[in-house]
Image 1: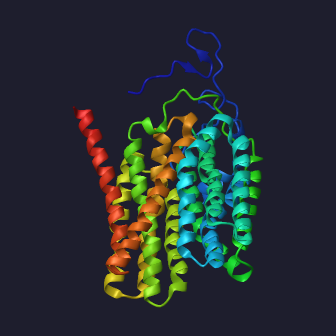
Image 2: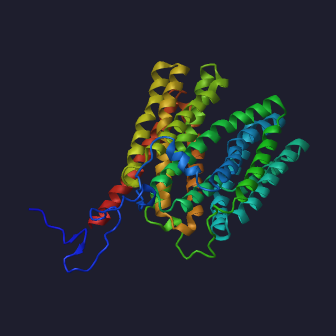
Image 3: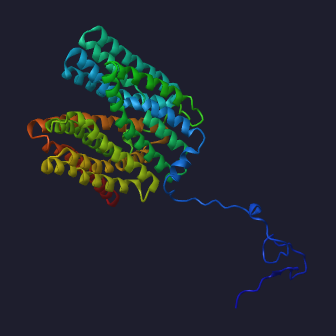
Length: 446
């Protein structure tokens, strides 16, 4: 028998009048309209489709800082190829051009974490603009040295100054982490968008640089890249509403000392080796097929697959802990990177290889998105820019080593067998992560 109510429409049994809330069974008035009823907030775990990205840019200031950041990030794919074309065209030596750009890459690995530490301490706006100015002056000095026939050593000194370029992608991710610190699902979508933006910039940057240097004059790519970097940094830094607050002096330990960070950086280096070796081997393979000019388009297909997969991955939302997802992403990348190797070794056709690279690229962005999420989880909040800059250093180190390994494989094996280099690097990345997980599990059970 159901329990009897103690209060009826006339009040409680003790005779005192009692007014029941509107809309209840004992109230004879009309129910309260929907607008007057209390609203309860419901948080959805994921947001399907494009609605997830619309929700990101509905936040005040996000569209403006993203536009500025993309402008400043586009030259990252322009500076290297523009410098190579400019130096090789003037001095007649690709070896000199490659050595100069490699020096700048090494300088970036040294300067990047230090600039990011200043960003964490003094704020993005106070550091990004001066750093971008130094990088722009370095590009201008390189252009003048090439144009005026200055000694070779001046090229190294000038291009090394471009290492002051701030990590624009890292600063953008830091803003998202600050704005969405209480919404892991939206932060996953933001990280996915940032990785897709990286792929887009590295896909369009070389194309734009090649067009400018080929259709105008050799220095046009360097000039355009410097102008875009400075304009984007100014626009990005002007958006102060979304800027994370600076920390006076962090008492947190270095991100390098965070648990699990060291093997993660080694894993990033192996992932960078995938990118570096893939680029060199693809250029060599296209040249061997008699279509060297098509190498850029073939590599762009890989970036297209990665960009599309990154956007879909962000719209789908996270499933499970980031560390576990990273293991699956690395395993998928190791498996898919065997496809270009098989296509180049068996089919011997550039269109077949292009299709294989398109599919293989689909594992790249989800892997990078998840790895960045793990970095954000393991890095102290007041040293986040420094932590993500260390990731970039690891990637650049891997790209340099991968380029050397890919070149060795092409020279000593064959262009087709050269694709064993990126496949091996991807397998190494998964093995490093698996070994780290086993070691952590052994420490917990000890």
